[in-house]
Image 1 (tube, protein in one colour):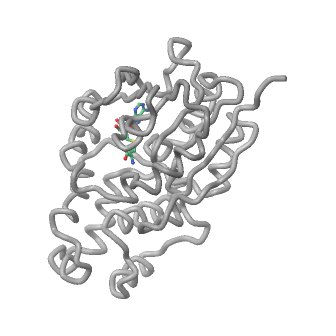
Image 2 (cartoon, rainbow, N blue to C red):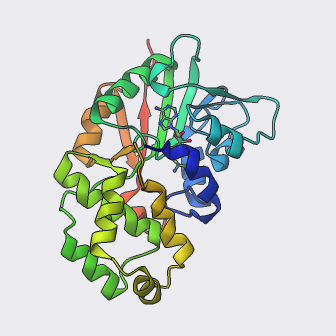
Length: 264
Ligand SMILES: C[S@@+](CC[C@H](N)C(=O)[O-])C[C@H]1O[C@@H](n2cnc3c(N)ncnc32)[C@H](O)[C@@H]1O
């Protein structure tokens, strides 16, 4: 089995929104963090978010992702190689925690619940958790929907389409999806990549980024709104949902703004 994130960074330049945060997303996250910027924790090493916060600690468990993407521009920005789920009192406290798609990168609903409890412990009173998520729709996405959307040109870019395959599988498997199953489903539904490239205008190079899932040991999670809210309630007293922009699949990629209550 391969370590997904080790191979992923080599394809980074081929990724775009919804996979990576564009300026609209960065602006929305920055606005939601508001004035809570004195000590920000970033889950991952997303370069666009590193740029947005001057006083920042990035935490990522992948040496390869850190090596490829970590390029701080300020002396007040540091990185630590660690698993988010194991962050103890040696981390923080933080005024805000930010992330892009990081909840979806966890392996199971159990891990999401553990992360919520960890974040609660790592945030200052009044602190904020602001994160873009990929949200599975309530209405299941069927194979027929996927096939039709290619034919009707309603497919969006390749990454938006790939997430819809993943969301369709998540409906059947209880939110968590194995990366190898996303690839298998794509290959089963669309065995002729040249034809798909011609029909959609996606380049073969971009379509082939899905091969990073070959023999991957990774799973991804795609909770629906209700499942996300059950998870957030374990760590936060209040939360709200914000729109994240106008890019392909943006309607399925809202930003959660969760607040840790200030003690009175
Ligand atoms: C933030 S997520 C999602 C990618 C995101 N859309 C972006 O543009 O950066 C990807 C990162 O999370 C890291 N990661 C995943 N699970 C982790 C965990 N449990 N602890 C620490 N880092 C983790 C991976 O190594 C990878 O660098």
